[in-house]
Length: 133
Image 1 (cartoon, rainbow, N blue to C red):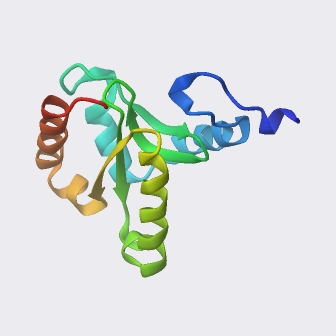
Image 2 (image 1 turned 30 degrees about the vertical axis):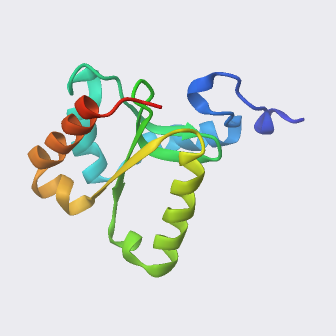
């Protein structure tokens, strides 16, 4: 097995490989405006004391934000996520992520950019109302 296909044993990555982890590092340096706005609110445990990771590798996927303690994935979607093929892809991806026991909250870029307080409130509500399986 070459080093790019080596599986990480750390449970926070759900058996991702080095190649996916490397892609996540690149994405952290190229976040969208909406992702940057939300990250400013999530980082340093600002929301209810929960730690979030950005552009986090989980299995074969890279999610926008992840809270391991609550097994919560947060995705911030641009307009291309409205296209039929992308909706189907996102649904398939969500099913795969749920196999790891994860929950997914999705926000549109516009929601994050235009009403970050509402987005934060929805995240806070999830974090205080839901417990991981």
